[in-house]
Image (cartoon, rainbow, N blue to C red):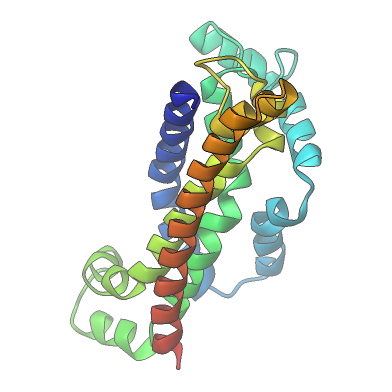
Length: 222
C-alpha cells in the first residue's frame, strides 16, 4: 500500500473541495436564479469537462500551464517554480475538471427552493447575502453536499488528466490512481489490488451518500 500516494490524493481532494465550495454555491445559485442571454453557453462551458476525453483536457491544461505559456511564465515569476509536474498544478487542474461535479448539484439544490420562500425572505427585509446564509443554504445544503462529495471522490479516482499535468513524481504528483497504474506496470498485482480495494470502498461510501442526498432533493422537488 502506497500510503504517501493515498495521503497526497486525500490532500489534493481536500484542497479541491475547499476551493470549489464557495464557487459551487455562488455559481450554482447564479445559474439557478438568473435568466440572461448566453446562459446556455455558460452552462455548456461549465459542463464541458464532463464530456471531453481526459487526454484532450489534459493536453490543453499541459499547454496552458507549460513554462512557455503566459500562465506558466507568470507562475514561475511569482513563485520560482514551474506549474506543470507540481502539486499546485494538480490543484488547478483538479478545479477545472471537477467544475461540473461541483456546480451542477448545487444548482439543482438552489432550483429546488420555491420562489415563494425567497420572496418571503425579501419581504422580511433580508439582504441577499443574509437570505443566502439564513434561508437558502439550509434548504439547498443536500445539493451542495452532494457536489462536494462527488468532487472529492472524482478527484481521488482521476487518472488521465493527473498523469498528463503532474506525471508520476513520488510525494509530489503521484496520486493513488497513478500508483495503482505503476504497480500494474511493475506486475505487482497484490499491491495494486490492495490500493484498488481502498478506492472501491471510498467510492461505494461516496455513492451511498450521494444517492441519499439526491433522494432528499428529489422529495423536495416533488
